[in-house]
Length: 77
Image 1: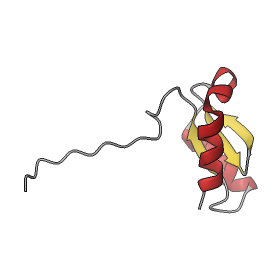
Image 2: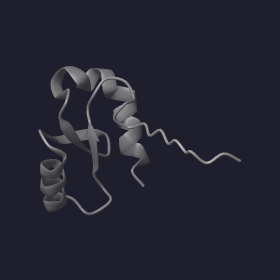
Image 3: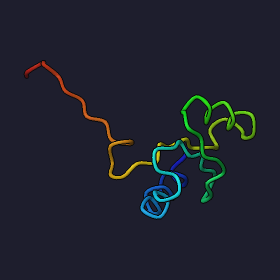
Image 4: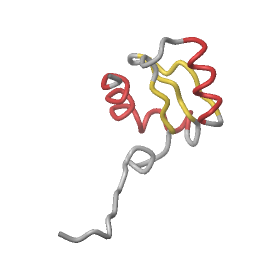
């Protein structure tokens, strides 16, 4: 649903870092439409301006730590 926005972030991550590092950025299409110090502020402000499901909120940090998930299980098959 937000593939275009996430692809934009990945393609421009290094360019966005100097301006937005450690901020939550709101992306619509291929534009950064806001930058916020907290995720809750980013969500609140973006929900007021854009339709649900049309705005990506992404923490702007170097590397893939802000968008990678590692899952561990103690279950062994």
